Length: 368
Image (cartoon, rainbow, N blue to C red; front, side, top):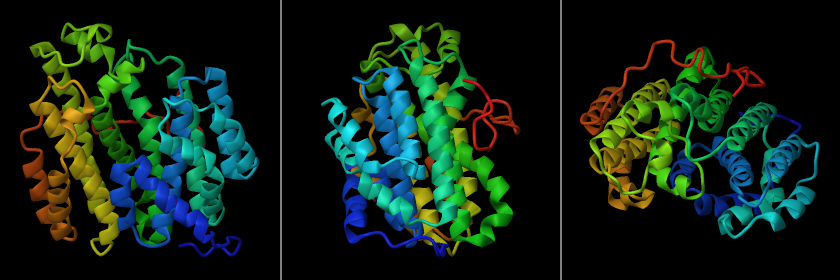
């Protein structure tokens, strides 16, 4: 809980900015984060916005690789209090091009308000956020240096990439949940492993959905080896094409994402049923990812993420049914069994992640 005597309350302006900018930069998290209990809600929103700031640096096409590395390190220094947020924002904001979304440019320009909230979190919350940003920023940069239409070498490389951009976020959220609910400490180790899988399921879903937009800006995060086994070269893929080979490769990756989302449900069911807000936060994200995978599976000829985006009506139904079942584990299992019954399903090894992913530590242990 937030009982650190060294922390001070954030200003109304800082909190108002977090609440204002969140829906501008994320449709999904703008839905899920407000479900969390007070104290946890503000910390998770703050963490997400800082991660989004790191993403903004890496995605800015007009920054050199050296500049991106320098700004990522500077962002970590800002978050840990070793550098001034206002000076960081004043230097970086004017360098962001029109290819960066206006909301992301606003986030960077007013980063000092986000950092004001960070400073007001308790020590455990700050430590979780700082560790996440350090691992994420350095890991993303390593992959971004070699990004191109050739994709990633294989599934193991995709696993590592997903860890740096999403698995580490799952670990951070777990630490925040355990800080908020000390009774979860006994399940921390099991939760952390499932959290990495949770992150990979969500990230793989986004990679598959956004593959054509990524390709348009010169990046591809799909594994070459999977497509090569089906006789396809990633560099030659075109939006809207439909062939049995492409469908087979796509379904193989849908199956992997689906398997990770099943583990994500197990993660959620480890949260006590009385913690309905935390469960909703998790369940809505899983539900929307499953619906996206269903759309991808049904429409492999899609040419943009908008074509497989979950409709507002489907979002509303997902919210309604999960709210009814939120504290009933058996009913939740049945509902999700219906939702993913027609999806391909890969078999993950019981020891998934032991070799492919960095260990849980202050720094990733495996080189990219």
